[in-house]
Structure formats: C-alpha cells, structure tokens
Length: 198
Image 1 (tube, rainbow, N blue to C red):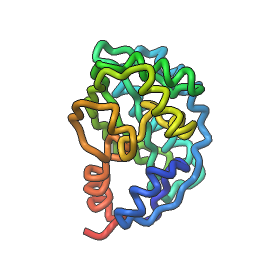
Image 2: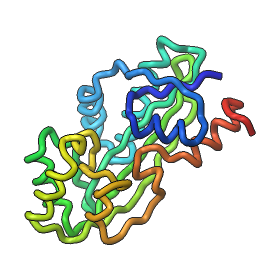
Image 3: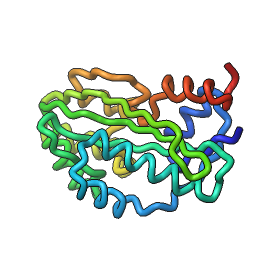
C-alpha cells in the first residue's frame, strides 16, 4: 500500500528513509494559516491544534490520492503557562522568541494523522518537555548567525540534532518527536495496517 507524506519536509523524509519506509511526498494544498486561525477560534490547546493541522494536511492530499495512506504531520509549541508560538517570520523575531523561551520550559507537541479515502483513520500526538538554559543575547546572536535562516522552518527555531542542543539544560521526551515524527507509534500502526512488513 502506498504511503504519502503530505509534506516536503526534508527532515521527516529523511527519518522515513532511514527507517526503510518507502514513501512519496506531496505538498498539502490546505491553507495552513487559515486552518490554524479556524482551529484557534475554537480555543483548542496546543496538542489539539497540532492534531487538527496534521489532519487537515492528510485530508487535503487524500482527496486526490484516495487509495493511499496519507500521513499529515505538524508541531506546535507552548510555554508551561499555555502561551502558544508560531514559526518566527524572520531572524529578528526568532531572536526575540528565543529570549522569551530562555530559562523556561516549553512543550513541543508532535502530531501525526493518517487519512485514506478522505477520512482520518489514525492519529497520534506526543509531547516533549524542553527546558532551555538561560541564554545571553550574545549567545542567541552567535547561534542565529551560525545556523542561518533555515531555523525559520521549525516552530522552535532550533535543530536539536545540531547546535540547537546547546540551548537546553533538560529534555524530557522522545528524540523523534522533537524532530517532528514520532517513529515508534507510526511504525506500529503501519505494521498493523499491512503497509510495512511485520
């Protein structure tokens, strides 16, 4: 059975490929910002928002590829007081966001949803609790200069698999969830569905 990732995310594609999971990638046609505004109007928490966005992406591709399993993914970030963040639009905004996250714990919610024939047939969301150390303005500036604008593609503004690990003093959660694709529950479902060898 075909598996389609409803995204062109290089990170998620690499994780699937490294795990030996054959897949295709197609960009989701949904308007993510409009969908996010709609879901936030319903006062959803960060976990439910991540699931809603993952479902919208999976469904948008499933409508044109009904016989495939379509995997939609999303991540949201919220402080321990519930304040939610979006991807920073530019490097100055990212510097301000990192300063706000400095010394505090935030939660990344990594959500996945699978659609087939235009219906959601599986969903999963996994949190990771991320505690940043106190970051100086000089460190933040040096970090952003070293990593560059590619950081803007992630809601947290860091790559945990690279220099981003230097931002943290404590992490509680699955490494794959932090990257944006909790592989173990996904693989368990794909085996159950007969999409990969058991």
